[in-house]
Length: 137
Image 1 (cartoon, helix red, strand yellow):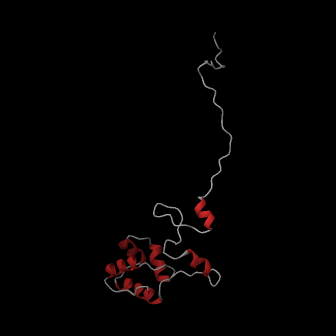
Image 2 (cartoon, helix red, strand yellow):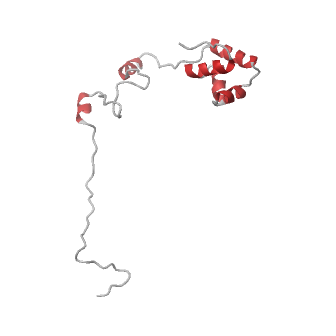
Image 3 (cartoon, helix red, strand yellow):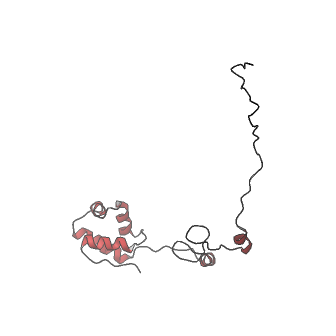
């Protein structure tokens, strides 16, 4: 038997494969959904009762009723001290940012009061400028 080039040759040893169209349904573990709260699973991942900053999720849910959560900002004292120390060294914002190996926008945000204070970065600025800057609490 010779087959034409367009039709495949089927051997009696070939297995007929059928595609399974049954839908797959994924569900959460029964323990977490039955309790109605997020259960802590551990460091490998999963659910947690706290945010990355260690604030309880329940506390955040309760706080939403009162007032919106505000992020800390740079104090006026730090803004003025940073600008004065930078100008005393005759540095531009761009020069200071290059020395600290951070974006120029970060220095602009610190001096305008829009940045969220980072004590590690403030310490780096102190070492580079050679003066003490007020820290956030």
